[in-house]
Length: 88
Image (tube, rainbow, N blue to C red; front, side, top):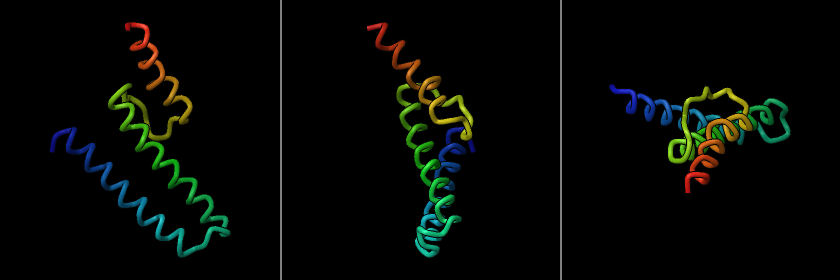
């Protein structure tokens, strides 16, 4: 398996785990503190996936999944967009 195939495998696996987590959250109910925390984790995972897609197109993906989202946007997306805008 090459790196690209491995990356897509990991994305698919994480997507499946998010689906399972969402099912568990529905069963637990939104008022349970554990469910609220799990909801935040699931939402962050979805945001990281979306940022990975956008960064692949317009920035870079040289960042760990636990990097603060503001840092991802500033350092790995906006920087590239600014450079692109300046070169136009």
